[in-house]
Image (cartoon, rainbow, N blue to C red):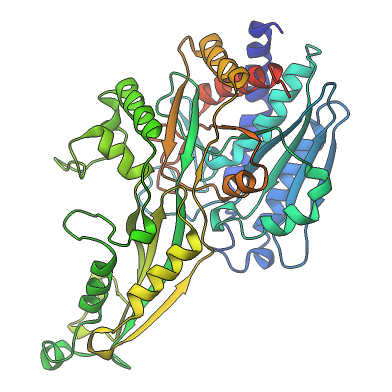
Length: 467
């Protein structure tokens, strides 16, 4: 394979076919079912499905076939089957559902308003990870143009990942024969430590999401006459959170949510910190002189990848400040996002959280809990020598720098499912979510030059596949 021709063809394909289509994709508010319960009625998902399948049919790799599965009441699934010329079975994965809008977008930008600035495509979902379908097809076609022998490749694109992939187990069963037993899984939904090399993810945290509601009164009352005697629902919620989290340090107190971090992952983290250096702290948009929870950078990375953590990501029962009268509110509702490390049983963790929150309610207040679909964390198996060599060579060829490993604090539910179901599979978990890309938040962007080079790296790795 001529790597210069490969990169040239990939760059051209991105410019002519991928960027214009991603621009149209960003315009569609295809929020995941958790954020748009009326997704079918609203039609945004069907619009994205049509956009993606129409494009894919136009650019299908040679001899490939496209199938759409959509069971009653479930989000759709796209399967593109590319026959191979040599032994082996590769599964490539991505998703086309999106996170909600979020506030705070820069002037002239917005979640559904694609903007290209400084070679970055801004808008919701482009980097996380709407590009995956298009880049996967591009990587295969670029190799076919040079008659590179490939294994059989199945591209699987889902529409419920941002909701915890609740529909995937159904489709995994329904499409069991078609999926077969993957030898290699390539996922383009992860992060990058910088935009200077190929990064591969070695671990992902799981996620337990829930609504915690504290009810004190049937209706709001004058705070002057009630406060001090009637307990504040917010204060009760604070007490409950303190059962789970040390409010001074952020440490999670429940043993069911903790694991002993493998020593080789700690060494991996040290290498990552050495590679990134001072750029580590620059990844986040700190306000003023705000600093991280620890000055030890290795410990800081472990806290965001291998330790549990609690975040309050939303709330109910709280009027906006400009409309907040002096009223003791009847209830407080908090949306919690609790990240759990790899190897933690998400169902046992969920039970421990529930038991901790509902026991002996302060003041006999009414405590209500509603859990989202829990997701397990994941830790990669030992990488085969051929794959490790191919990843590093690909990075050297297209980035002129060696590859590097990274642990991620986010969740990709499908990877845990695949890891459990196919313990002998190898994994290449990678992506374009580097510093500043801000997936889920305002000003999310896709770094176009990096995405092009990463696509070339994926082609290189697939060209070196050994079953």
